Every structure is written in C-alpha cells, then in structure tokens.
Amino acid sequence: MANTSRPPPTLVRDVQFALRAMGMRLGRLNDAVAGLVDLKGGDIELLDHLGRIGPVSPGELATQLHVHPATMTGILDRLEKGGWIVRERDTPDRRKVRLRAIRTRGPELVRLYAPMNAAIVKICAAFTTEQLTAIRDFLVAIGDAADDATDETDH
Picture (cartoon, one colour):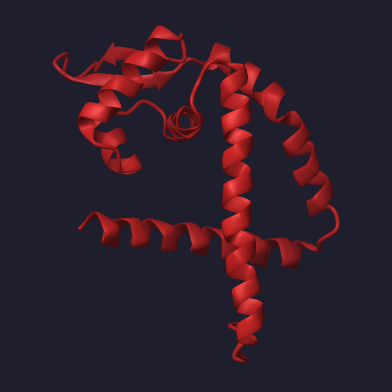
C-alpha cells in the first residue's frame, strides 16, 4: 500500500543530498579498490555488470552502460590485457564475439570489498524485513530514475 502523506520538502532535500554524497563516497571506494588492482573506477562497475549479466557482445555492453563503442573497445582491450575478461567467439555465430569476466580474478575484488560488505550486513541487521524491503525498493526506483535521466540526457 502506497503512502499517501507527503514528506516534508526538507526531508526530501536531505534524501537527495544523502544520495549524492553516497554516490560520491561509493565512487571513491571503487576508485580506491580499482587502484589496488591496477584498474580504473569505471572498470569495477563494468566488471560487476558483466559478471551479473553473463556473456554479452561488446556492442550490447556499450549500449547497456551508455559508453561510446570506440571508448568501450579501449576499455575492453585494457581489461583483456589485465586478465579480467576474455573475448570468445559466439557458438551459434562464429562471426560474433562475446565477453566474459574471468571468475578467477573475482576473489581479489571480493577480498578488497569485504570490509564494506561486512558493514552492509551489520547495518542491515538493525532494520526489519519490512524496512529493508522498502529500502531495497527505494534504491531500485532511484536506480531506474537514474537510468531514465541518463536516457533523457543522451538524447
């Protein structure tokens, strides 16, 4: 059931500020982790996305991440050279290439993100299932809004 009361504008502003600050702080975390394994912050996000969606073509990945195809080629060359991804021929159509994250590199990143992941578990323990469900739904909606805003900006 949706909440019909409107939150005070000051609270909405506080949420907006908190989200912006969180985005910057998570970006700094990604940059710090990336620097420890000779990557760039955006590489971490690309590897995370690729690991979640599975094998995908370079063009599909560029579209999904809103990255120019020529820029994506340079990023993929760097990640392949570093042993983070492989380009493989597509089984049904050998003319096509699919990208796959190399799973043996994942434990390096998991170890570096372990303190943050442990903090998230600890923070979540302070909330009820209903509260966490609302938080999850809120974060998903914010992510969807960010995608929509990006699409608007790209046009």
